[in-house]
Length: 468
Ligand code: GLN
Image 1 (tube, rainbow, N blue to C red):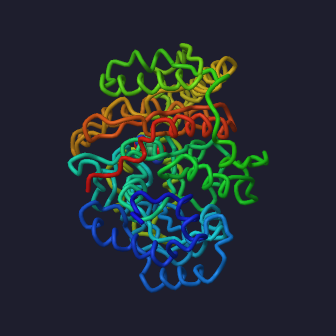
Image 2 (image 1 turned 135 degrees about the vertical axis):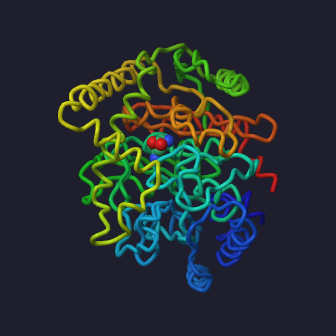
Image 3 (image 1 turned 45 degrees about the vertical axis):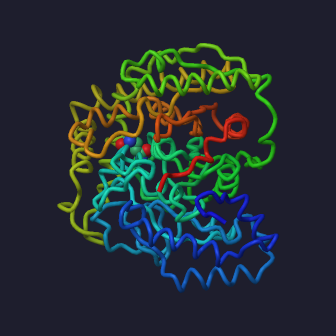
């Protein structure tokens, strides 16, 4: 068993058929943590070995009947966990240990998962590269001179390096899809309100979504069906029934219409090698039976401006609770990016500027949502690259916030409008992975998972594991 190749699906099968035990898998994950974490900085906290092995032994005595029996999982460090340090990647919470589990954590545990550790991230979720962590930034396992994507940086690195079989992340503007794209993994940003945000340290509450990072579409669909659904603790969760996403992933793309947004493909900053890989993927989808048409999302050009008014506004409000009085360190402990966002948000919300900034951006948000609604009357899914570039080198964009913000140009509009999207690996340029984004209408997770899965099975890019 090679843990870097092992999926949740094959691990569950291996346990059932007694090919290996949960103890074997947990030990293999711990060995990889030991081997790689000092160089790649994926995890900020690791649960102690004795506790983990004790849990594993207990599950090995059962018939592995739970949907995630014995599956080692890493959580982004802004999911609250009872008795386990939760920093949100920030020094403000360096010594904070929560007294309750986030709903998603409770659901994963109830499904039999083993929480192996907490992943590094851009502090509070602010970033696209992992470099805004208040700790040591994680590195890309396909090329350690490059970033792994962010803000769920450690979550992706931990899966790629076999420190766990799957991880959780949050996606407010890109943060599950981006690191999944840069690390050759599958990452879903669900519909806003599909998965409970209870117990997640909030970034921008009307944008935050909870997704998972896995090796395959099947594994992702399984994690999503376990964690999604109504939660009495989060009034924004919808009571739509949760489909069994992991079923019905086979088939062809016959009968599906896929839209290519012309504004995305006209973007000047798109790396031609990313464009080529994306076009090859689209061609493959046509071969698999899809009909491909051009569509238009006319407000794409103002999406980032809209995002970077609304999100910091919500950030400035959410971060106000970290006053160092009841828990956490004082406000002087905030890093530079958090301070920048608090200042921009406070400014945009202040009297005299509110109409010009916040309110205008809120109106643009409605127009962007309408762009997507209009397109989804004509197509089943929209396909585009997740990122316009390959994983960039560490330091390349950290001194230029605007360049950093633009790396999310194809992903942020999805959060502005609330629809779901999944990243699926779609090729390599040299050693560097390229990710394809498949966007669907509200609560259309089942459909985009199916499209992603058919494509994945026809290409199998996920099988190319890290060179280390
Ligand atoms: N990169 C985006 C930002 O910095 C998105 C972050 C996220 O999704 N958490 O805001």
